Image (cartoon, rainbow, N blue to C red; front, side, top):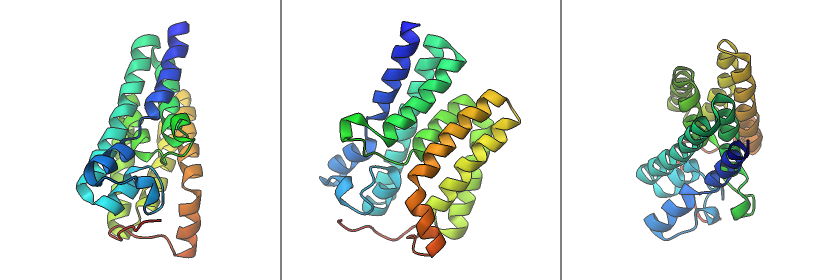
Amino acid sequence: MLWKVLAVILSYFIGNFSTSIIVSKLWAGIDIRKYGSGNAGATNVLRTLGLKAGLVTFVGDALKAILSVWLGDKLGGENVALLCGIAVVMGHNWPLLLGFKGGKGIASSIGVGLYVHPMVAIICIAIGILIVAKTKYVSLGSVVAISLLPILLLFVQFKLFLFGLALAAMAIYRHRENIDRLLKGTEPKLGQKSRIK
């Protein structure tokens, strides 16, 4: 039991590992939290430093999530793996070590989803990419894709539906300002560069 609890706690702190801050420091000697939206996530890195830096950040955030779910799986099985998946996204979104100011959890949620149910995750990712390609709104593609996750997981297992619902709820909450801007037509599109805050 102790190992299971420790796995969940460790997953939260793995989530605290901010790929965006490390990449922005190494890439351009800046603190990404002082640029663009001020968000410590892959999209803000993409807008500020370009595609390569954004992809590195995205992959790093996804990999730390995969590591956490794998750790939970090995130490406690599926249920612990699911809890670790939720914990790592919470750690990314609300990192204790960064004053609870983190990212929005999409890349980390993708990493978790790919480990837990690859096929459903790939479907959500594909739909999200299509929406971004069509509209140029990263936030819209992200919100739609993560909202589809629990719906599709409901057809697999109710426990996974609840898990997907938790991930979707966190992501939608973190995107509430983006959603407001989308409704007002003021959300920046993909390709628009960010400036210093």
